[in-house]
Image 1 (cartoon, rainbow, N blue to C red):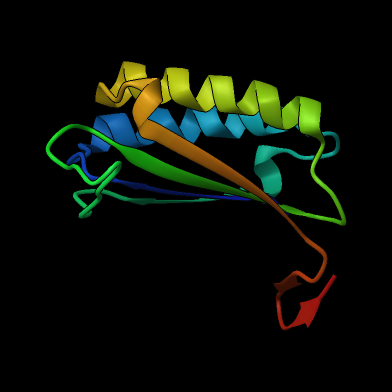
Image 2 (image 1 turned 30 degrees about the vertical axis):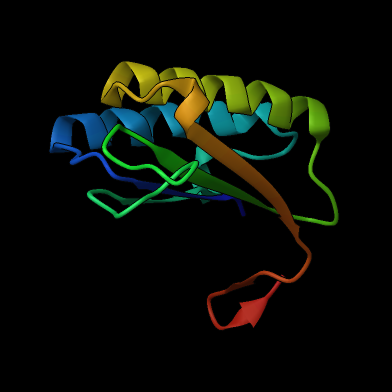
Length: 115
């Protein structure tokens, strides 16, 4: 039950959005037992974002939520690199302007109940 939520101040066209979604679907397998089969991805583009008190350049905030009691630190380290590379390639965002946050979520609901 992973979920990746992304906010960026860049306007994202459909082609780039599909490329991002597809790549994240592959990269989520860095986490043991996780796959695109249960991955939900949200992408909010053209958001107002300030970083270091500034705006005007491409930026992004990405949250990776993993169902369970902990997040595999080694997988998160690799995932951050892959996310930053992907955003630089697809949206021209410098990795220095990307935050990636990870959270383990012990209670996860789906289909009218919780796992």
